[in-house]
Image (cartoon, rainbow, N blue to C red):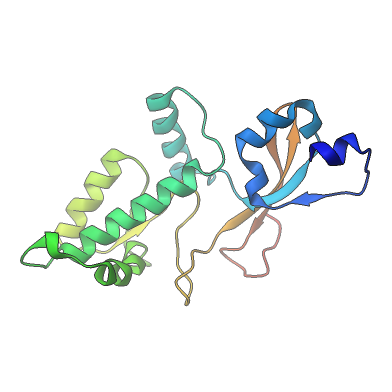
Length: 183
């Protein structure tokens, strides 16, 4: 990006999601302004995103950045799947990777009790799982619903660097419609 800017190139460039990391803008400074790309959304709009943002910022004292919500959701679904997989085992420490893999889809059961990010919600989810009740994890980065191939359906954002920050300029809903229409 520095060479592109210093070379005076003017062809519009669209970056992939990995450019959205904070260190990219930190190293580029004002040369990053105007750079654009596409990534998953930074944070789900609504109660799940709000809950995660509140918990995160109060604990760490900094705003969330790219990947915080998605990494959190990855860990949360793995933990919930481990609880689901181990629930009926005589020795829960003997749960296998295959059992956890098979339980992943059960973390987002349609019609299950909605569970959101945060320690209190995790505790509540653990109780529901122990009671044998289905859960539906609505994550900080999106609904965490799986497609037929086991992939998470996601929302995408077109972002632009502006004054040292990434700003979403458009959002696309690939959860409700695989053609990813604008939101």
